[in-house]
Length: 156
Image (cartoon, rainbow, N blue to C red; front, side, top):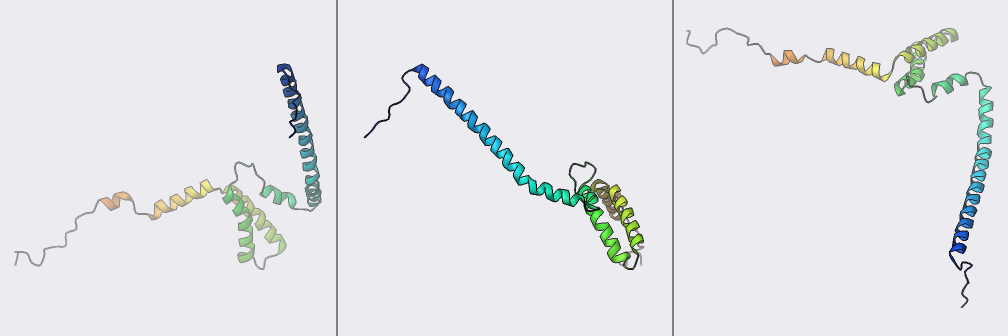
């Protein structure tokens, strides 16, 4: 059995060893951080290449803007209407229309979809529901209707 002898003999040796280990840990962390950033740059290179190729295709800016995050005024309903409304109009209502007419309707429908959002739609649905539902005052007050003299009354 062989016992390894420690280099630490006193408090000063212990402090020196702690300082050496902290410096070694910091050096290793910096090396790993540099390697991580280098790996991320190498992994992102194909994505950057594909993005540069896609940027040359006309119309991709509109699609990218459609799905862009960070716009406060757009919500899921707005984005769905921007995509779905032109598809529905072109598919069902403008089947035999020309390219120019379809393009104009697509632009107009996207502008109309830009105005709509889920808050406006929910307020519109609430207004329609309030109009359709009977009012509470008509449900509570029932008037007594007089149908005349009952048949079993003492009036005969």
